[in-house]
Amino acid sequence: MEHYTRAPSSRSRSLVHASPVEVSLQAALDALSDPIRRRIVRELAGVPDWSRPCGTFSHLPVAKSTLSHHFAVLRGVGLLEQRDEGPRRLNRLRRPEFDDRFPGLLPLILTEPEDRP
Image 1 (spheres, helix red, strand yellow):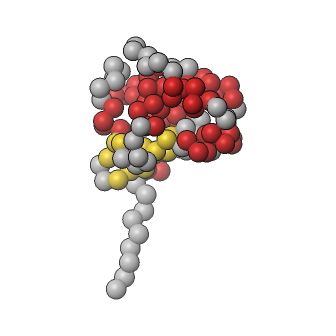
Image 2 (cartoon, helix red, strand yellow):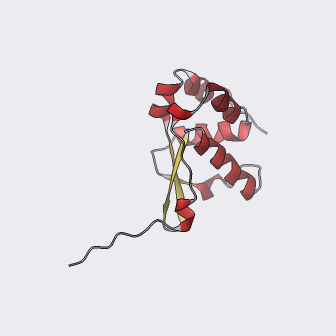
């Protein structure tokens, strides 16, 4: 029996995931300066890895294109990893990797009072 592996779709190939070790403190702080991005991080911290699709963030008060931008910024600083599973794009907070690079930063974000933009 032959086994086939599916090639990544053009949609998946467009995902760029930075490693937290490649990210400067300034870039991490810039990414976390936005209240919507901090809210995404807090919501992902409260669920198991790969259990939250992007579509479940539609309650946030931004356009879908703006939400996509926020996900890209979080991927770009190594805070977020995404993978496509069928029509859904699932998310994982890269907490251990980010904590290794910036100890104490995520706990500050996760324990701050919720911003309501």
